[in-house]
Length: 161
Image (tube, rainbow, N blue to C red; front, side, top):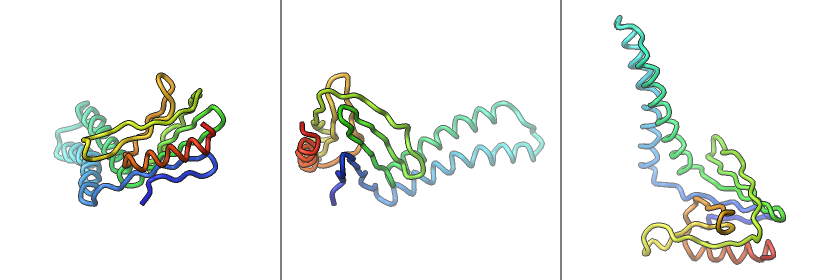
């Protein structure tokens, strides 16, 4: 299954889903990080210990960790990267399924494409790099090096590079 789709100057990269067990564990911990501090605070208040500022600190800290785990879980389940090419501008957006990151627009002249190997050599995986030096976008979707090379050829033809 190809992880990329190129239509009318819009490139969509899809993340391979991680194993179901891993996603269940990530979502479970994210849910617990949100729920347990609230339950602890409510039980403490009901037992007569009262409210103190430590509850807010705990809820804030574990809420941030829960949000981060939720984001990782959503990325590994529904993650896509949408890249639009408009003359010399490149618009990048990461889609987590339930929410999207802000669109990032960069002017990249000259438009170039390359790959960056990721992981161990025997994994034969990498990520797509758009641009060079200070003006680049490094995609987060890991794909096979063969698929990236095929995609680079398509992108060069589609964008007249």
